[in-house]
Image (cartoon, rainbow, N blue to C red; front, side, top):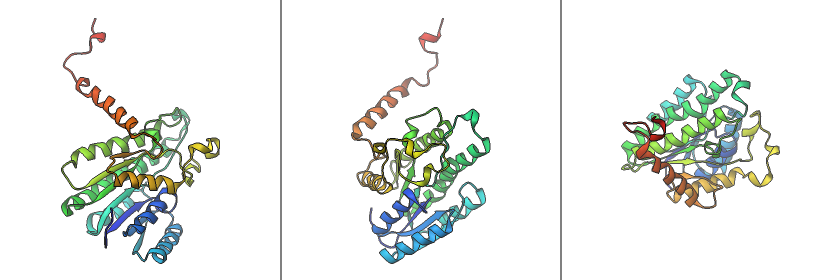
Length: 263
């Protein structure tokens, strides 16, 4: 995945995984369009990348929980023919029982993790397909699979990202456009601030650095993995999980109820 005079869009680019993606993609020769809420951090990252790599770096300040601000990014994705990569990294977290949660906070999380990702992907795909090349990376989470009592909303949003990506992979099976889902576990970033879960409460051996997580994700992309789980030692475990799911498919919709439900 190397190119010249082509652009990569990274959302949630001001820190953590997004900043690491920006750095790695610049090193691979991409010009960058960085999207996040914090203009000062975006500008600082952009300045560093310009001086270190001599790449063109544009900054787009946008709150992706807000429909009008999502629309600004959508317009860039639809109209900028240089765009070859979209990394949907922007996301938030919430760890609390549903009964103890604020519905408005949950709604904002869904808007960020699900709605904005869906809209931005929908905006960029027609151009990528028409140009005959491109990559979409959707950052999900290991908590799409490891569902916890306090992660109902968060795990729900990240499960959506995974299944949305898997459906796109089927849609684009005959296309040169690649779509990857990345399921990182705990990563040492600001993601945890205000999440309701203290990163310090987790064993250190569970926590990966952002640089290592992104390097693993890009290695998985280069290897053609449709789903990359940076911590998973054996990819065969994921493949077995998927085979078990596929084994259910022929019996998920039948004319009659299963025998155990019939008197």
